[in-house]
Length: 603
Image (cartoon, rainbow, N blue to C red; front, side, top):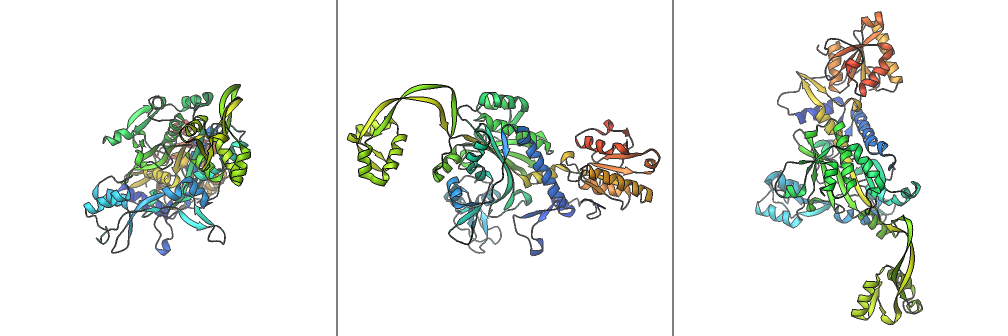
């Protein structure tokens, strides 16, 4: 969209029979925001291309996310990049091989497959999320639920793993998976990042990248995809001192405000209306179980509002225990209301405790604990288990080291209980008789403690955010479409027009256009058709500002600056156009920039 004209995709009025969702999808396809992938081959469900405008809008959404979650938090958050493909061991450790599943059901007549919980909810109005496959099968049988395509009988419900499987290199035994989230790359790199950031907590590790999920039957356009971009943050902190010496207090003072929350217990009672809580109030009342989760939810609230979402069109939905992922002890989905689809999730906020680091520590054998020094060392007395290692070595040979390591981890109280009840202790699966075990008291100087950090995670699907921006920006002005994308997110920031195709105006307008390009703006130039029609074209793709060179420009060196949303104009000196556009995109009103003129925009 960089040069010459915006001629493809003329603006047009939408038929009255279409709802807003259909209008947004049609506009997105026609004007180059997004469209189904592989169209010439009939398309593949769950895959979408981003066009020129969509790619630019996505870039700006990601930049805004980085502004909120990384740049403003740069004293505690860093960004990394990790591979899209991971070895099987990583996803065995993370629990994805076992738990990353959705319920699937198959038509026994036509062979089509459906996501069972969605089918039950859509056809029967029964909430099925979190039910076991057996429970869903029983509901299908009791209500004689049939295939929605051919009416055939449905199979029993089973679990379907959503990981995309591949091989790494030429050997089929070297199994790998496309990552379903960026999180595991950050967990397995935690120790390295912790060391290069001078071993400080709290520590946030952020990543933006492509992920893949082999969805059973993706629908709803950009809302449910098989490949998409995630913007994710894993935030590590000390669970015994989450406030970290005032760091969190200072940050909470900066965000403030309220959160709209629908609590899990309220949902269980059948309530649907969220309540408002101050951020600190939600922490103090235990609505949000760890303060860092509350902080990042507040940041997410502000970020999504800057995407153009009204306060009343957003809230946080606390997931019931059966709705939570396997790694989470508390989860909130950030929901946004959109046309036709209603409330959709745009981000998930999970308290993952020490699940991930503990699992990777167990499966890799690498110590993922961190050491936190005490302000003042102290001497403590503790009882330890001492084994007759000469006897252990002779008796168990190669297993002696493993037995000794388990003895160091076993508490003296547990050892005494086993000796009292059995006359021996069990270490590494072997019986160690009482005569080869001593429990002694030892003085030890404690300089700190080792622990596995806990984690909270805000995670955003970027393509969903892109759809949300378009849905909330779409408006109609008479028979015209105006895409009111927030100024700083607009893919094209300004348009430059000569009033008519007079050689003098064209030359002046193109000179202004080049100045704006050289200043770093994304700007289109257009001299095709009437000025009203050109305004309509750029309104429809969300261009917030239009600068027009007219005959008065030749006399006094001023141009008009037009606001997309109000169609009002002001005159500004041509030489001030770069600074005026910069201020306008940052939120300045037209009246702050120049002399008001009559409204413009009609044919």
